[in-house]
Image (tube, rainbow, N blue to C red; front, side, top):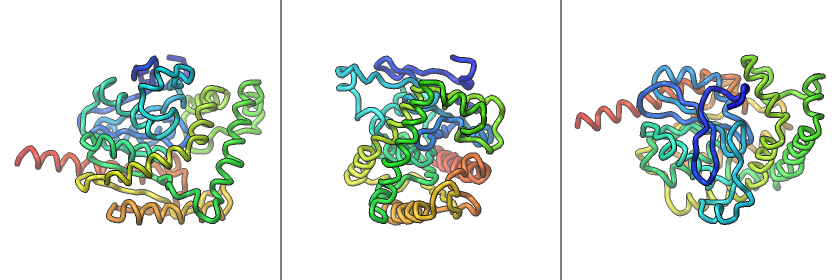
Length: 322
């Protein structure tokens, strides 16, 4: 464990790979928080402490992101025995299953809370391991038809701008330019301006200077089409059982860091996603929130999660009494 690594443990999930996870609180259900695309578990810093007062909550870093180890890309024999290709949702869900069951034996049932790509992981996990899950909270979910909107506008942005930007950051980190850019204030870390502690400020700057972390950020973005294909196939094969509570959270504000056209295409894809796959889910629109609600409007997220925790506890209590 490095000085910058948050409190938590490295769990061996097999195949010579360890993932970082921190759990706080007690009891069931266990709430598992899964971060947006290419982001570390620090995004949940203003959320998990309030959840831990009521039940057990776990935050973790997906493979290669934050303080979790990258999968061994050269060990072809190892990869042949594992589920899915590295940095796709099938592998992410399999990793999460090993992490919270055989590697750490967290109390079931689970409430899976995911944002963007993390929401896709939560859905795929539930499709495969439905008996483990009692609730889903999907925050700004990544729609599998996003790239089909407005003549592929998001696909062009994703592969033509986002990935090259992260590749440039990765190169800058490798040769030391990123550190210099952070020192002089030319570059800001992803959580800047969101009332984070000094430890997290340092940690986020450290990750921006870490080529392995940035390589995994690139990979999560690069394999997104494979992820979309896998989640589409999973949904064709089976539906999520009606007994599982589902809440979907979106904001009614556009992300000021993105052009209006991208915001509109995202909103359109998000609405199609909800109406097609989760027409009966509780859809909560957070007033004044955009894609940064996890760390800029955390209380809204906490409120929805705790409501689901209470529902699951009551349901389990009634089941036992009957």
